[in-house]
Image (tube, rainbow, N blue to C red; front, side, top):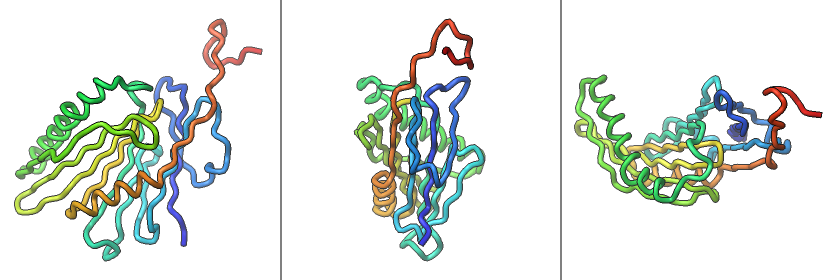
Length: 208
């Protein structure tokens, strides 16, 4: 049985952008100073097909045909976090107002592009703590004509990295279960603090 493993190495020095890489072998190596490593695994790996983007910022797991009771897709998107430590009040506003609003806006855009009716209903949206980090959890129901699907979203603010995990399925319980399982198996490792940069040294040079 081959385990599906994706590791994301995120440099804390995020200039000019977020540096990401994926490898199935980096898990045994120590995390470098000023870096964070996120490892994702699929539960019951024989049931899932996995794909990743070329730059390593997105990972998608899709349940194989007939392997699950209903179709299931789980995706991970890694991006630069707007802040290392979210303000609790700001995070509450993000959970209750901003995130549901952005999900509805994305739905409206898809509706225009597909020329079809799509309705999004927010079932729950709240703050949480996942893997020891400030997080937001959202559950939405998406209705297109006579069919519905359920989308479970967890956003984790892990220091310099924002991790968005999205689980979707026509079966509400399966969508929730998959999100819980993938979050449970995910590992986040932080390296020691990066040494302070000598302000007298130009960027990219080492002070001896």
